Length: 350
Image (cartoon, rainbow, N blue to C red; front, side, top):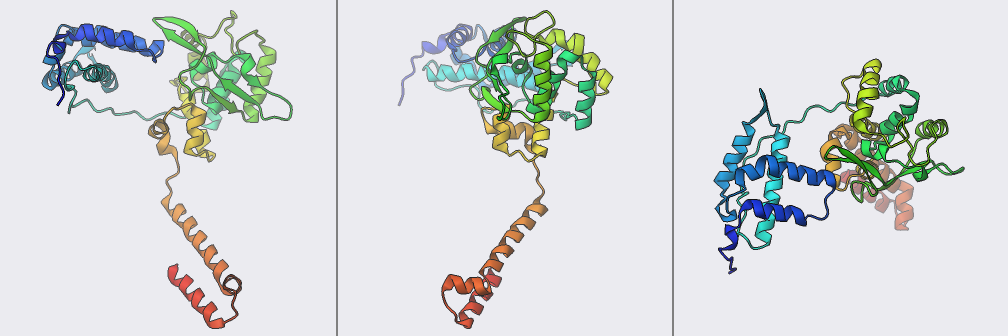
């Protein structure tokens, strides 16, 4: 019942993809860079000159197989996550083509994609964190403590401003995550409002983190940044990783260990101490609680035996409250037969 002008389907994929990217407003620089890389290196070479209406599901599947077998270096093929990322960009472009009436349906239907097999995430123990902090140069000790117990992303730690830290007497110490340091096209820049609305959050700090941070602020003063570089600017991860991180992790005996895994460590600590999924979602700055469960769901306690024991205990406590004198008070009667009948019904319910 809808008319699609056949002329629209003759538009080359390449021209439509460029228009699509130019119209994307609500994406960050890094995401735009990823789109650009997918287009230039994979999508345009494969589909650039093809009319939108001529791209079939079979051709898309062939492309997925081709890129899965492509070696970007001798002996190295693209990972399943990388291939899925490029496909996601392609699928989004074709979906928008349908929404704009250029084609009647997307060819991205029942496409078989490589399966992602995730490696085991590493988490530091409490002792590991102490050893790592001890191995860090003085100006970076608080950085590791905050990362290990608050779970901030690297770009959030690097972008922490001094005016977002609150340590007022009588109040729980806290910090506000707002600005971040982003990298795009090999250049670093300040992004005033972080990764997303959920990423802009206020985090109360445990005393151990507040103590380290208070010492750090006094020992390494700066007009703007909480963690400035030795030269006075904001921290750049590439420099920090080569000059500080790799040596410190080796000295602490935890290498190889990626800085981002401090974030996983913080999540593991919080879950172990009883944080629920909503608390973890908020503190980690996730927009969708499904992200929280997908990454950290396996860390939540799944002890079914303990759960049913607690439920049973709850029921028995309730039963005891309803027996004898409690039943008499609740029913407002003194008849022993009625009281006995109510007690028996409670037992049968159990």
